[in-house]
Length: 128
Image (cartoon, rainbow, N blue to C red):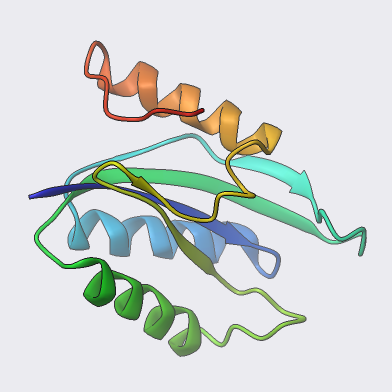
């Protein structure tokens, strides 16, 4: 099993899409834990608001298989460049970090704290 961390975001019908993705990831990942949801303005300054959340869990899928499932799901839910119905980014696969420019963002750091609290003494995420 591989420990994975996935970032969830949406700027269109945010509550509906984030809740759907959370349920989908809960079924995809073993021992899935979810952070709270957090509202943030678009970092590109468009004025749109995103709902964000993190999911951590275990998977038998390879990196390639997991990323393919995430991207297929984004397409299936109608994601476009302007309308992000759902954004699913693999952030961590075992000890390998992805989307390195996202890690320092305040909302990622805040949501990581939720995951760390949820998992208690288990140290599974290095947020540096």
